[in-house]
Length: 292
Length: 334
Image (cartoon, rainbow over all chains, first blue to last red; front, top):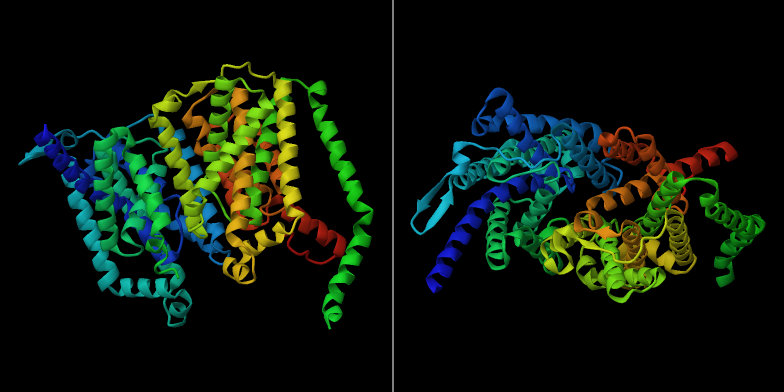
């Protein structure tokens, strides 16, 4: 009896750890956009779910395997995000913080509506041989897709970390994030950087969505869930750091898995939200640290 | 010395009183006549018009309540669905258990929603600006998921109200009553010094605190009153539907509707919620044949209003009127 409980705990922890990597990936774009542009991007979850549908469409119409389609999905999602920033958000840059926030809220409503129109409200999932199988590793059995998603999440997080921390683009990005006005004075094209950041955020969100579609089922309105999970990750990990986001994702993944183990699987998401709310209340500096 | 400082205000106040003296009672008379005319609607029109009227009154009352918090207080909440849901569930549970009459149920719904607002306020008010917005959104979603998972209140299936549902015309009158109460409460608050505290908090919370505004209590008051007024609407909606379930009662679409109405009408303006409610509901009726894209079009209008008319339709109308009257660009309506 005691032994079973122990192995269940190990199983839940390793599942949570792997899923946490995927959570981090779904949150990374949100964290980038929030950190660099000071924009709470309420349409972020829809970019994730658009990625799920893009992967579905590419598989159904062109027979393209979702794993091979990942770069294309990212490119398409980024291509969708870029004009959104340029045409709709950029013009509001000097209108205070509420105008862009509420615009992204309206965009999320529009996106959900269009997704329902295009794909109906039915629950879907992407079915491939590797989304159905599991491997036994010592005491635990792990779904193959969780392992794949975790590996890809690690790789993307590492790539974004190198980009932000060690490239010329990253230096400009950090300058624009610290002080947009001063950065503009020394010749950083802040507006263009913001557009590129938003597109990059959308691309990563879309890519993570393709993985979400393989690991879970989704509907046109699932985006809200990934938006809130993303915020929870950002709060847990601290704003604007790729390493923090990864850590936050893993922490949230493990917390949700433990919650699901203790209370039942239906409470998984609730546990995440409650952790998020408590953290917001107790340690808001996780969010405000750099904004102040 | 003091009189020197005070004089300009006194002058302007006297001038304002002179200009407004004949107008204020006229406005009151006009509003009362309007309410009487609205109350007569069921005698003149059929169930369809009553239905549309109910929807306008419902959304107007909700947006009025939201406007107190977001428009005047600057606390943009995306958690309104939580208070609609709490109101609906309170009214249904108490209606089934105690058979109280509708007005008492609505009061209980208001009390429960306000109580919940007070309960979560210490956590929510640690969040400023955008983070308050995200926090309220997460709170409402958490509550919805809890109600789906928790078997106590009927779970995902919801609960049936075992008292008779009022007729369409009676519901319309109830909605009119709720709308009058909501508007009266908000306008009364805006006539007290709390109005100034609230706007001070909106414009700069730190400065307001240094100037001696009790910022926490000001925010708490607005949050609780707004929640109570939204809870009443939720309670009435439960009486209308007769069956409530978490996806509907706690649904994000409440929040979407409220935000759309208040912003399209004009945040922080008195007439805004009502102009917005009429516009949004008539737009929805106009798009009745295209239910698939109704929300997308509302969203597109919302984006256009935020971009081109930040004061909403009422602000745009006010500045257009001012331009006509004065012959130069009018000031913002705020």
